[in-house]
Image (cartoon, rainbow, N blue to C red; front, side):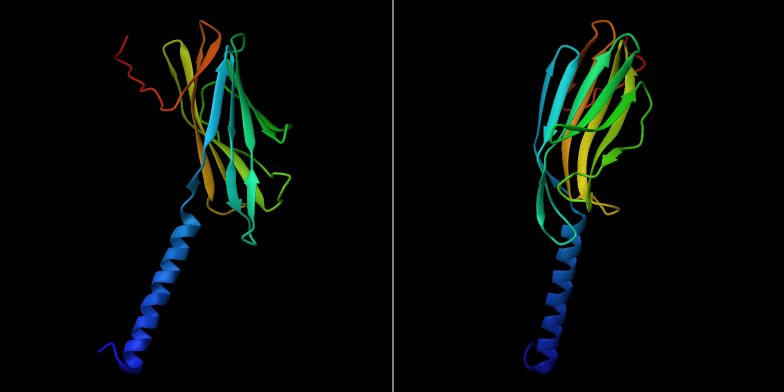
Amino acid sequence: MSEGPLGAALLLLLLTVIVVLLAAAEAYMPVRMPATISCMGAKCKACARLEVKDHLSKMELLTPCIVVDFEGRDMAVHFTGYDNDTVVFEKELSGESPIPVCYLPKVNEYLEVCLAFNNVNSIGNSLQICTKMIAGIINNPARAFANTGCFVADTQASSITYTINPREHNPEAR
């Protein structure tokens, strides 16, 4: 049955469907990229290398960084975003889960880089804020991301530490 014009047409249709499904899967599957994180005292720095295709399928290397610092006086964690050593955003958090902070990198006006926040909560004498850097074409699904983990600010020691996974909030633990 695979011989003749009908068999060839079915085979061509099947191959076309496979190509379309693969293209759709590639378009919506963000690629995980590495991030480097270092902490000292009340300050941490996280940088990522995000390779992203723009609207013309040109590959761009983005290298966003964030500096996270904790001020015990105001009980808030401060995030400063950098693009090639230029400040692109500043955000202060003290307990709520905010919307992502985004900026347009200088290398390509059709791309955006965002810092997303999750697992924002206080546990004992500390404030935990987990983050992820996300990059892609503006108003489209993410093309690449870097899990930058969780930053835990200790309110008694006025210090900040880093952990890859969020700590569990257990109200019964004392």
